[in-house]
Length: 384
Image (spheres, helix red, strand yellow):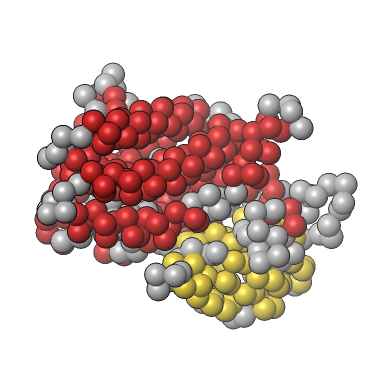
C-alpha cells in the first residue's frame, strides 16, 4: 500500500473518492493530452481542465450544498488535492479560489457574497488572486501600506500589491488594506479585506516575468478604486484575524510538500531501470522525508476538519515542506549522475528539473518566508 493510500485505509469513502479521481485523471489526460508538470498549482493555468474538474464534482468539496458544493470534509478535499498534485495536473486556474477564497467566504462572507461566488468556485469557473504582499514590506504584512478610505456607499482603495499570482487572468483580487492609521503598539490592528474585481476602474495589472520567460506573477496597482460595501469581506478592522486564519489553508496543504513530487517520481522510474546503491539510498531518503511531512500535513487537515485552529502546525508544514522541495530538486539533480547517458528518461527528467530549478528559489517566499514562519511557530509555543 502506498503512503497516499494509507490515509484511506480505514475510511472506505475516502478510498472510493481517491480511486474515482485517479480514473478521472487517467481519462482526462488521455483525451486532452496534458503532460504531468512541476509546481502546477502556480504554473499550469488551464481553464478547461478546471471546468471539467468542477463538472465531475471534484471542486468545492468543503462548500455546503446550498452554495453549489459537495458539503464534504477537509479530508475529502485533501485526497483530491493530493491526487491532482501527484498527477501533475494543470490546476492553477481554480487553485486559490478553491483553497483560500471559499473558506474565507464561508467564515466571514455575507450571504449575498456566498451565493454570488461560491457556486462558480465549485464549478471551476471562478478565478481569484490574493493581494497581501507589497513591494516595500514583503512578508511583513503588518507593514502593508495599501489604504482604503471611507466614502459614500463604500471605500476608495489606493496602493499596490506584488506577487499577485494569476491576477492577469483572475476575476478578482482579495485585497488586504489599512482602514485605520497604523498604531505602533498594535501593528496588526486596523486592517480589512476587500473583494476587488480585476476589471474595476483604477486597477492596473503589470506582469512580473520570471527568468524562464513565464508570466505567473504580477504587480497590481489600485488607483482610487471604488469598492462598494457589498464587497467588504468580513468585518472592518478584523482583516488581520481573517488573513491569519486563511493562511492556515494556504500553508498547510499538500502543495507545500508535493509541488516537486512529479520530479521525484520521474527519477524513481528512471532509476528503477538501473542498479545503484547510491541512487537507491538518495531516493530512500527523499521518500522517507516525504512520508513524514505528509503525515504532518494530514494532521492539519484533520484539525481543520474538526473545526480546530491549526495556524501553528500550518506554519511548520510550510517551513519544513518548502525546504524539502528545494532539497529534492538538488538531490534529483545529483541523481542524474547515476543515469546512463542513453536512458530514455534523461530528456524528460532534465526538462522537468529545468522548471523545478527556476521555481525553487520562490517556494520559501510564497505564503510567508521561512524566517517569518519560524517566528509564528515560536509565538505559538510561547517562546517570544
